[in-house]
Image 1 (cartoon, one colour):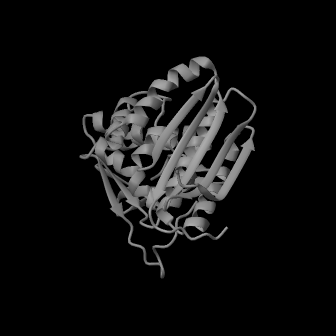
Image 2: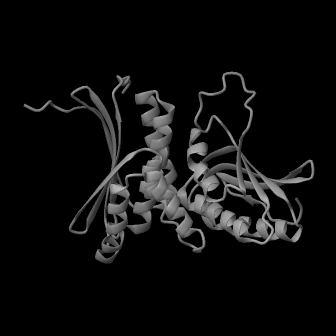
Image 3: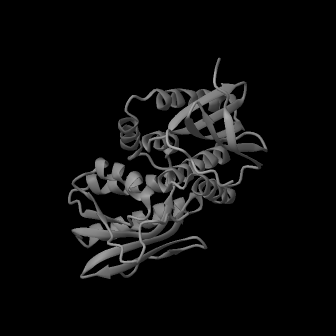
Length: 136
Length: 167
């Protein structure tokens, strides 16, 4: 996905890509207080872009996201609320890492906020011995 | 006669509120839980709880020092992991927060309360206020005490199974 600034800090990144014509946002690292404002800005810009392009869906890859605090979750809440209340909502597919157990617990409330907008998918883990890690 | 409480782990961190410290402190709590309990689900939830509590203190403490304690104990066959934070706060802040704390503590359905707070906060810019409700919604017990200008927040998890003592 061109023309949107990516976000990189020492412990967090938000990068854009595309898979089969569907825009992909990849979040990595630790979503803590230091990234709340830039994350909020990035999601706002992304929303404007997706609306202007009449997008029908976006994928959010959380495979390498180790933690998200409630303020970062709130940035997602604000984004989802905007999508839910826009005239032509697009779908947000959150791809969860099953090894990061906090993700399903933490993100299911976002699906309940907008069940017609937010979908949770688990990334299939092909790593040998997968299922015993919880990144921090 | 009441059963004695056996404490197998006690960790106390006293620090100046600082945003960069929050992640380091929550990782430390998570690592201790992971080593002591060998339970990834609990260590994951305590990592989240430690992060939210430490961040809360950093945002709202009015004093130069705050503290966070982790305690692993056993009493009458029941194992208990406790996270406790203490900070001083301005009287107006304590008045403001006490109603929300009481609501979170007494919630019969913590997930429903959390969903309601998410819905209410959704259109508001720059407002979160979800951290403590998240702790309860993710299945941890929550309590608090206000004495003078000191706020104590307590998060707990109970276990009936034996806990490996590796400390």
